Structures are given as C-alpha cells and as structure tokens.
Amino acid sequence: MPSPTSPRSTVPAPGAMPSRPRRAAPAVGLVALALVLGACSGDADEGPTPVAVGAQEYKPALEARLPVPGSPDDEVTLGLVSLTADGSTVELKVLMTPHFAGDDPTETHSVYEMFGQDHNPRIVDVDALTQYEVVSGSGTDLATDVVHAASVNGRPVLYQAWFPRPEGDPAAVDVRLHDSWPTFEDVPVTWESEE
Image (cartoon, rainbow, N blue to C red; front, side, top):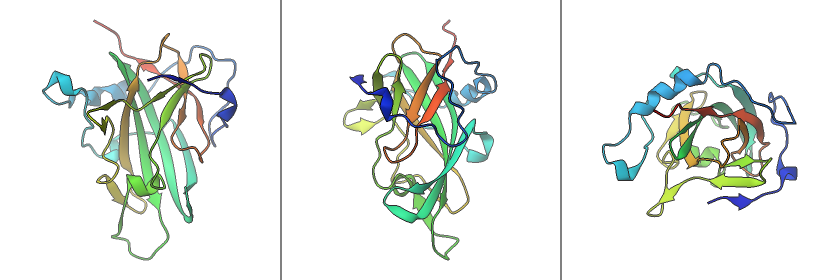
C-alpha cells in the first residue's frame, strides 16, 4: 500500500551516482536478469515466489559494504542487481554477502541477521512522494525467507522481494533496504513488455 514519504530521508549510497532531476534511465544489462523469473509456482493465486539459483549468476549494478545494524563488528556487502516490473509487481534482487566477526568459516549467517534482525525494505518514488512496502498476503511477505536463507562469510546469497507496481511507471526509484543504511538512489526499473 503506498504511503507518503519525505524525499529528505534519502542519502546517496556509496558507489551510486546522484542524478537529480530524474530522467529516463536505460536499463541495459538488467533485462537479461528477468529470464530467471520463469520459476514461479503453478498456482496463479499465489503470485511469484523466490527462485533457488546460485548467487554467482548475478552481477550487481550498485554495491556497498556496510555495517550490520546494531552489530558494528559485523558487515554485509549489498549488491543491488535489478528492479524488474512485470504485471502488477516490481521484483527487487539483491546479493547479500556476510562479513561477520569470528573464526569459524563454516558458520552460516541468515539474511535476517544481515538485516540486523529488522526487515522492512521499501522502494520510494521521490517525485511522487510515495513509498511501497513488500507485498504481503495471508500474513506472509512476498520475499525470500529471511530466517532460512543464509550463507557463510564471503559467499553471497540472493535476496528477492516483490513490491506493488509504482503508479505512473517511473523510470527510476530509490531503494531503502534498512533505515540505518544509505539509500540506493535512482535505481533504474526494467519494465517488462506487455503482450
């Protein structure tokens, strides 16, 4: 459900190029990533579901290494791969690579831990002063299971989440993965052609 938000809450992300005012952004290189979308459940009422694929298949467009919220000794590399609109939703793909303190190379760290045990990503259309939260149905977010998706230090895991399609089909939106992390600004949206 869209809700008003203030554009002053955005901060340039490391490696992201601020590009205000907004303009039509090419999505070269991101279109090919939409090919993985074919692995959805057979029940049309359930909507899209996360797919199990190797994170090595993805190339981030934007990347930042940040401290884990509430755990300054631990860090996570966020690799924003794509935002792809198809039908009534927009799919976000992010590679998350843990860099947690400790000597055990076999210890796994969940996506929930990498988010600092606070999971509330959003996409923000700054021009329309509107933000969109993860689609939820029957009390379950339409996103990767953050408790069970995990990886060892230095190895990325793919996080996916679906948001409502922004009104007006903007060329780019901002992505806020966590309130304590900088915003990825002007992330291009790949709009799937409707047949």
